[in-house]
Image (cartoon, rainbow, N blue to C red; front, side, top):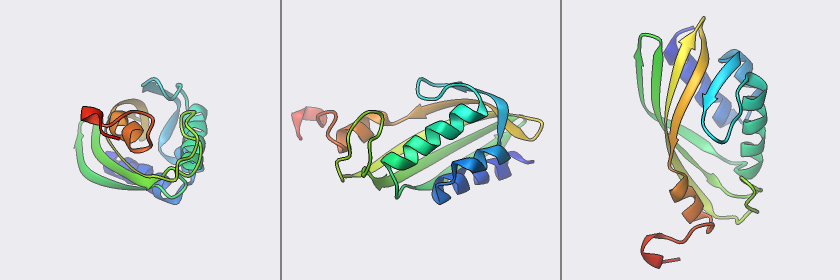
Length: 137
């Protein structure tokens, strides 16, 4: 499967809130280089299940996609409402927006390895877990 198609499946999984779609684009031995998701396809599925519970109306837009060799790089915007617990933070009902830049390594037509940069500070400010810059609420 092409890197572009894998990224499209990622967006489809997010926008349909169907964590079982990871079977189509995440390798079983997926290596995830971030502090929120353990390695492996099943850990990825569990993470997205919890994420969708915290942001049940989340919608994702792919802003950019670059495919080169075995690397796929995407820039994404996530928008939704914090209507469930998210990373231990109780629901606030507030709208949120988060941005990410994701890099995947492709092996045998699946995402095999992942790195990302997440704009979590903005997310946590929007749900009131962190004060806004300059001390504004």
